Image 1 (cartoon, rainbow, N blue to C red):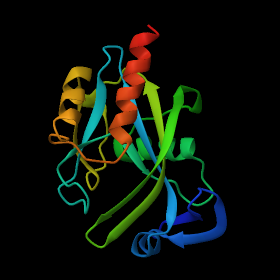
Image 2: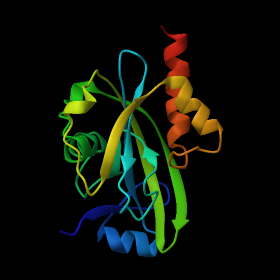
Image 3: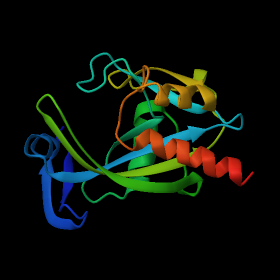
Image 4: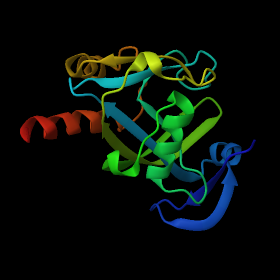
Length: 181
């Protein structure tokens, strides 16, 4: 099944065009992507290991969930959809906190990713042993301590994806949380 994305201009405004995922990545068309970090009461973040069959970052530890925003969809809707598809986690809009956005432009092989990224956090305790993983996307999940994830980020993304901007928003969120708790 083909996925369709709203095409944006370089300022992030909707152009009124809709294109397939393949065309967006082949032509470098700007579109939206989302990331969510689920953080438990121990201040750990739930990470997923990407499937070995993924084109980008196979077998690497990654954000809790993320993906593209489909045509006609808002970022929070994509987060709800991606969490359920990839991990079997049902979220309610009220649980989701928007923490920022950035742009990223990356070429990996024949894929040109020009994204307007939206970042979200969900504070929730989840039993990772009861999750239903989407095998073609995710091979395993685990909770990682705040200090461990920050160490990996600062150590040249040791065994985690090097998604531009993404991990920096997690660090910024942790800094904000530490100041305000």
